[in-house]
Length: 134
Image 1 (spheres, helix red, strand yellow):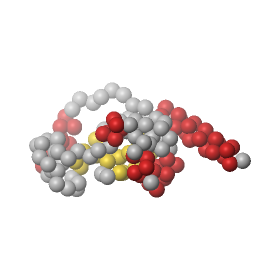
Image 2 (image 1 turned 90 degrees about the vertical axis):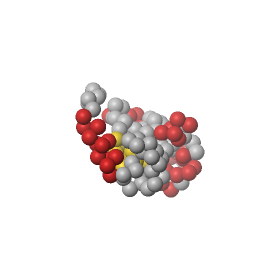
Image 3 (image 1 turned 120 degrees about the vertical axis):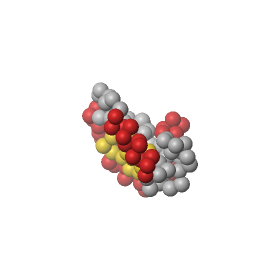
Image 4 (image 1 turned 90 degrees about the horizontal axis):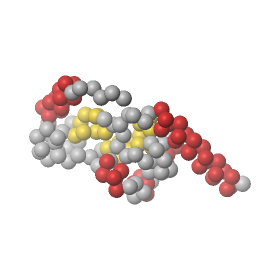
């Protein structure tokens, strides 16, 4: 009976991940694979880990991750581990970021800045940039 329950859980999570991935394939995310189920992620399901967003295939995986984040972070690929790191250098001035109080959510991730002036410059640059077609 326990095996059936485990198989049902895995099947349910896989189906949920497949449907979630179909809905939002063009929206930006940090990591590409769910650290819990190793399935494609959806922008709908995320949590914050050390100042950056981590994406998942379903809400159940978010809850599992939040109980033991380090266990699941260890399972990520090198590329996904790199993708969830917070930036330590301001993208405007190249100065070191001393705190994480100033950020802009951009393309599915948090981008941190050294000062409010840099936040304003970045927002202006984003507003002036040509829009990408999805």
